[in-house]
Image 1: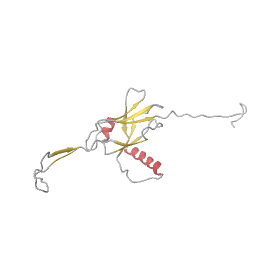
Image 2: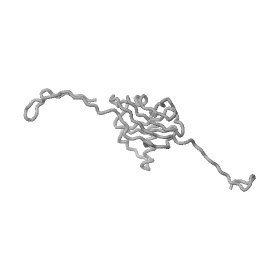
Image 3: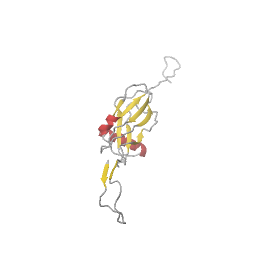
Image 4: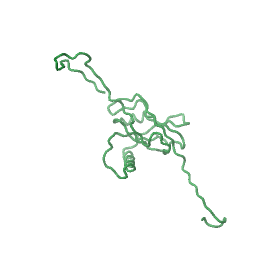
Length: 174
């Protein structure tokens, strides 16, 4: 939030006094998600997926844990989001950079990002919404007034199949 007051002695180039309002207030806005990884609509997320939320400004991490959560199909309660530890955040971001660029990049990301995970594993094959909720604060205290929703689907449980073709019951696999 920024406030300023016009100088009472301000005049135009023609020398006329300033008329009208002298006090102004503006807000640059609360933090909003500009990009999410995995992408919105992804249908193969992991049960303990780390989500990279690229933001349009710096955020207060404590407010993210209070205001961001997951809604899971068939579950009546919200699953809280937790902000990952700094070391894990860097590992996740480094991994994504490697997969995008094919090499390790040392430069800092141009946009602020927060990495979150569900506070408990998500159930397999369920639709999930990540909610960037009202009340999330920017680093300078501006509070979000609207929600953003991102839809996903959790992958199926791990399954493996082993086939063994034999000519008879006592023979080894072919």
